[in-house]
Image (cartoon, rainbow, N blue to C red; front, side, top):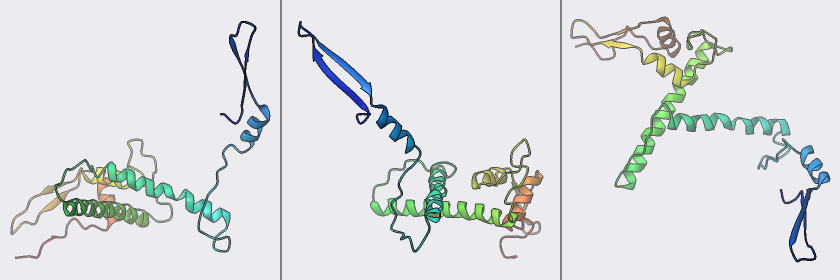
Length: 182
C-alpha cells in the first residue's frame, strides 16, 4: 500500500497538523495490470522445459499438499510424546508407510477404473467422482468379518455393492483364505 499512497502533513496557523492523503492512480493501474501474475523461480532451463511445462509441474504441487492433508486427516495422526529421538523417527516412518499404503490404494483404484477414473455410488446422490483414499477406506469400513474356525474359513460379509466393487478394483479376493490351511 505504501507504493500507491501519497500523503502530506501541513500545519495551519495555530500549529495544528493536518494530514492530506490520496492514492496514486498510475501506480494502482500498473498493479492492476500485473494482478494474478506471479513469478516462478526454477532450476529448470529453457532447453529442458517450456514455460507451460514448468507451470504444469508447479500446479502439480497440489497433489503433494493433498497428501499432507491426508497425513493429518484420515490417518488420524495426533501429537504423540516420545522420550527418545529414535522412537520419534520410528513413529514417523510408520506414519509415512501408512500414507504410502493409503496412496497406493487410491492409485490402484484409479488405474483399475481406466481412463475415466470415476465411479458412481461413493456419494448418496450417485454422481460419478474419482475415488479418493478417504472415500475408499470409508466404504470399506462398512465390511464385516465373520470369524471362522478350522473347518469354516472366515468370510467378509459385503453389505452393499460399492464395497464389493472397490474390493474388485483393488484386486482383493474376499473368498480366499489368508492363512495356510492346517
